[in-house]
Length: 422
Image 1 (tube, rainbow, N blue to C red):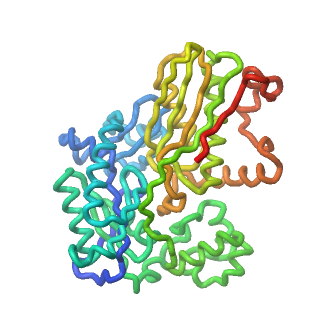
Image 2 (image 1 turned 180 degrees about the vertical axis):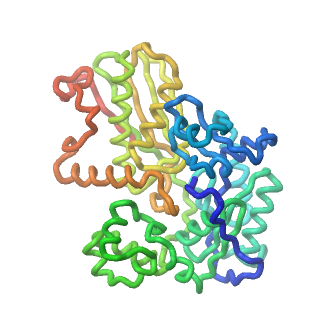
Image 3 (image 1 turned 135 degrees about the vertical axis):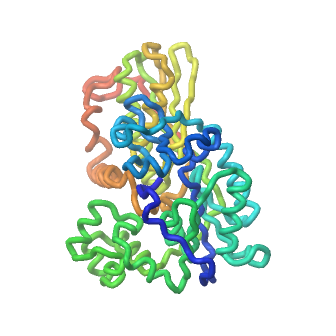
């Protein structure tokens, strides 16, 4: 969910030159909230938040009426209700959202075999081979939007462009319920007035480095020699920014879905009943999982927590993330909520684990606003320090307390970590 609330919405005229704009990014509008409104039509036009009312819970999504008050996904629920006291809060129903997602994705599959599912509510489509049967990219986009409304009652926004990056930017600008086509010949005209923050990978620290060079717009990046960019942000980032600012993005729509997961679990030397100890282990495991996600350059669309009790009874609970993420903080918050939801405090725990699921290409997260950018930058810095000085060189302060079955942080025999390779 992007930070926008629809007030800056841009859509295309009916007769636009869409030749070559064959990459579509389709994004369902306020998906979870929109599904809920199908069962609660009396709430249409009102500020609705999907999430749990627990003061430690976060917003899963919100209607555009709630977003107008500043409510955003992953925001603490307490803060959201401060911003919008009149909001109606509905508990999430993830199975229902998955069912609607499958119905929408099935519509996409009837249009083109080249569908790349990014998350539960968005996908890239390559419609270059569908023109003979269905018409131009803009006609196909309109056809898709009509079918989604007619067959599910939901609305979606579509960006059409010559590249994945520009198509995703365009769909975000078209929200809600709009279509924005960026003709290939006008790609740079579209990109260049935008803030440098529109470029994938530009977070707070990168923005500071670029701003020190006097670069504030995408046009500024495009016109800067790549050698100057390298001195500011390094070789890899310089090459990426130079390409994107000039409208170059060679990534094709990937039809193979990544179904594998990345996980870590720990078996305690002694059974644990201390809830705070379990929370600390979740934080440590989430940190390890997120580090491996970033190393593999993939994002998690969901999180699962595994608990094995002293009597060997095993429970697994999972949930979708509001947006794909490789940030430990986001994985920890979701896994911690899952742990609280089990509701069996004091029961001796033998094993606890965290698993990242529904993995997707890390390059897919390219919105105008990344809610995790500051955390991602900080954790990427930690990755670099650990690579140079060792895995234990940097850790969260809350993990410095001795772990059960350990002395000064050294694990005793019988206290084992295991991991699931991607």
